[in-house]
Image (cartoon, rainbow, N blue to C red):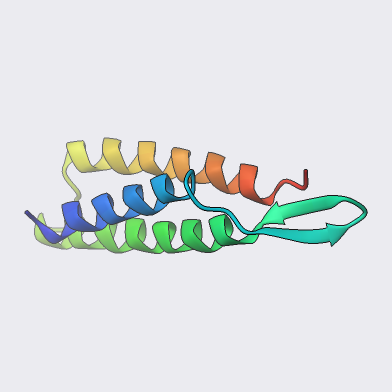
Length: 89
């Protein structure tokens, strides 16, 4: 398995883990955000970036099409989860 695929899988696993764990942080006034989800999603974005760099380095400066599509879908999912975690409820 190439290093880029491993980083992509780690990013997806961290994004999926946020559905199972939570640590609500109280902002006051009955509002809270999910601090643990935001922390895990930040690491998911770091792994996605590392995977993108590795995919580009492995293939002469250009990531393969399958990786680009998978990474963009993962980034969209991570962004949606981050917005959900950081929107005060």
